[in-house]
Length: 235
Image (cartoon, rainbow, N blue to C red):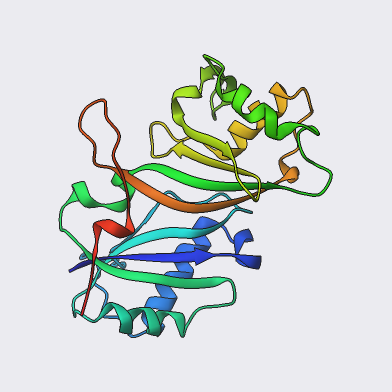
């Protein structure tokens, strides 16, 4: 049986990198007594895959990983057992059965993500930045220089910003995600600071991921569904 686990990563745990988070959950699953499935061969490992890993320093209440289990158990019991093993800053939020098949794997499904961005004291873009958010999004293009391991290239990220508006806490962003169109909130805010004619300092931002989505729309349409809602509770 394939299950999807949703968890939160907050507090000091935001400084733990992706590989260490993977190791952390491998140990947590064993401690929780969940009958997880292993791969075959000379070096068996847990059948587990994570969706859209976070950058270091970013908090989230919408992290996901899929795994295979051999003995079914209720979602309520699994969440309790896992949370009994969690360190401060980590919390398992749900444990749901998902359909079999590669097309349903969390890593392959990721299409978009929501973020809440707030600014550290006295590090806002400019005094009237709230009025400039709409003007920024009304531009026909938002061009940035995107750096890769091999080179740099100028790209238009406007098509990948699905929503950007002022919220009570700061700025809400809904951005394209996944292996092809992945757009980081830091890139968008760097472009916004440039638009406001203020030097960008990534330390100015506090970024929190709110949700991760799959796109179940037809061609040229977008219909986003959270990865959590693609699964079902186990009784």
